Length: 396
Image (cartoon, rainbow, N blue to C red; front, side, top):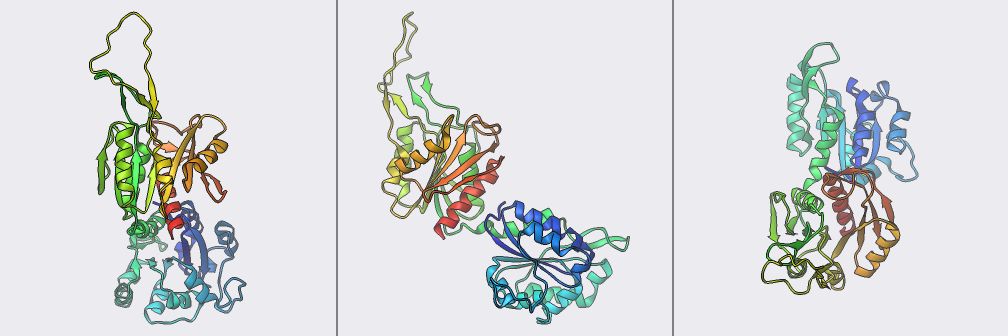
C-alpha cells in the first residue's frame, strides 16, 4: 500500500492513546504521506507538540485563531489542503461535538469545513464506548459518511481489558492507505513483463534472466488500485494477477506486435519487460547436430519497442526501464531521450537486493524534467506503488 504524496491531516484528541501519535505520524510518513497535525488542548497533556512537529516536518496546529502564512484562515486552509483526515484517538467528547455540529476549536472547525474523506478511530473505556450516547453519536457520524475504524479488544488505561483500545499505528495507516486503493479507477494501463525467447532451432533458444516479477507486481498493484490493466508477458513461471487481461507472447517480435496493437487504447504504458535486442536470422527447421566444428549463428536486431511507442505516444505516459552495470545515470538519461519516454526506472545490476529473480529492488527515477530520485531498497510491490504514484501525479 502507498500514500505517496498524499496530504493527510492527523487530528489528535485528549485520550491516553494520544501517546501513539508520534508513531502514527512515522507510519503515515513511511507510506509516503505528507502529514500535518492538529493537536487539541487535551491531547497536549499526553504528547509533546515539538515531537510531532519534528516527525511531521511541519508546524503543529493547536488554536483556531492562530495566524499562519500559508493558510490565512487556518481551519479553511487545512480543510482544503487535506486529501484525507484521520482523527486518532477520537474521544467520546470529540465524537459528541462533531455529531452535534459544533466548531468551537480548530479540529472541530476543520471537520465542519472539510470535504475530504474522514477516518475516526474511537478510543475509550469499554463502558463508555457501549453507552447509549456514544453509540448514537457513532451511528450519526457513520450516516454522514465518516469512516469509523473499529476499536480493538485488549488492555485499557484503567487496567481492565475490553473493547475500546485504539488499533496500532501501522493498522491505522494501512486503513487510510486502503481508501486510496481505487485511486487509479480511471486509468487504462499497458504493462509488459518478463523475458522473450528467440528460437535457434526446435530445441534451443536465446533468452535472458528476467523473471517477470517487477512487471507482474506493477500489474497486480495497478489492478488492485482500480486500473484496467493489459499485461503482455513473455514466458514466466508466475501466476497472472487477478483482474488483469493477460496476453502471453514468446518472441520480441510477438511482444512488439501485441504492445503496438494495445497502445492506442490505453492512457499509459509501463515497459518492465526485457525483450531480446537480437534474434536469430534464420531459425533451423530441425535440431542442429554436433559437428565437431565451431558454430556461428547470425543475429539480426529486433524492433525497439519502447522507441516505437515513444514516437507515437500523443499524450500518453510512457515509463521505461534501464538495467546497467556501469555509468547508470548517464546511460539512463540517454535512453530516456532516445526512446521518447517520460520516466526511466534505473536498475544497477550489481546493487545488493536488485536485479533478476529477487523480490526486492533498488532503483533511481529519472524524468524528462531533469528530476532524479534515488529510492531505498524496497519490495517490488512497494516499488510498483511508487511507479504508479508517479504516473498518477503525472496524469493529474
